[in-house]
Structure formats: structure tokens, C-alpha cells
Image 1 (spheres, rainbow, N blue to C red):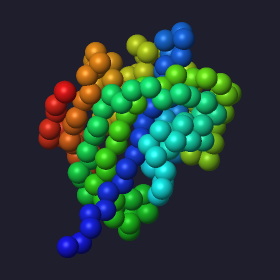
Image 2: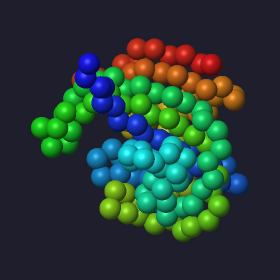
Image 3: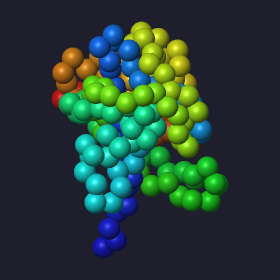
Image 4: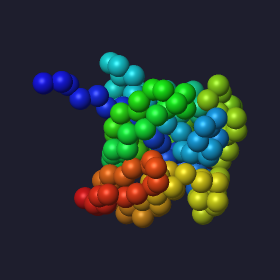
Length: 160
């Protein structure tokens, strides 16, 4: 049996005391909430804290998981050659505890955005959908399967 290969990623909805959400503008994906891939041997929380710090300059504490998402689309990376495997993304709520807003190699802009205006920034349908699920969660954990290529399509949508 061949062992499956998946990308494991984490995302953080960082909300400050003024009710603003931390967004970063990436080189390839436009505006998103911060996060990224979990490295080999790294736990989920450490990965999320690291990714948020790297992309935004903000230090956080991670609170609760709010969503689990499977992107089962198979497509090519930005280089047009590398195959992208199935992705599992886990989204968490976070609180800022320090740091200064700053950009990185991965981000060209970083901003605190009023919660109600976040969807004005985000253009990717998968990211918009995950943010809306966060807003609607009411303490429930969402599970969703979707594909992003060739077009965004929700295949499974469950709240637990």
C-alpha cells in the first residue's frame, strides 16, 4: 500500500479587543487570514503561532478550533509543474498578545480590518466561505469538503 500524501495547513482568525480581524495580502492569493503549512515534526498550535508571526509580525495565543476543511482538488502549483495533493486545513480563533504589524517575504500588506468589512477584502471563494463559517459558527465546528479548481465547488458542508 502506498501511504497517502496530504498537505496539513492551519489558519488563524485573529481578533483584537476592538473587534478587528487580522488580514494579510499574499503574493499569490490576495487578502487572506494568516496561516500556512505545518512543517514535519511541528504541532498545529506551534505552526499557527509561527505562521501568524512570520506573515504579520503579530504574536498570538491560539484558542479554539472552528473549522476543518478538505480541499480535494488536484492541480498544479504556481510553477505549472508540481502536483498539489489534497489539503486539510484547520482554522482556529486567536487573540493578539504583542508584536508589531509588519510585512514579510510572503506578504505585501498587513492590516487590522473591521469584522464587517473583511469580505470586502477577500476575493478567493474558499477563503470567503471559511471566514463566513467563522462568523456563523456560534461555537460549532464546521467541516467542509470543497475543490478550488477548475472552479470553487462545495461538496460536503456539515456543522458539528
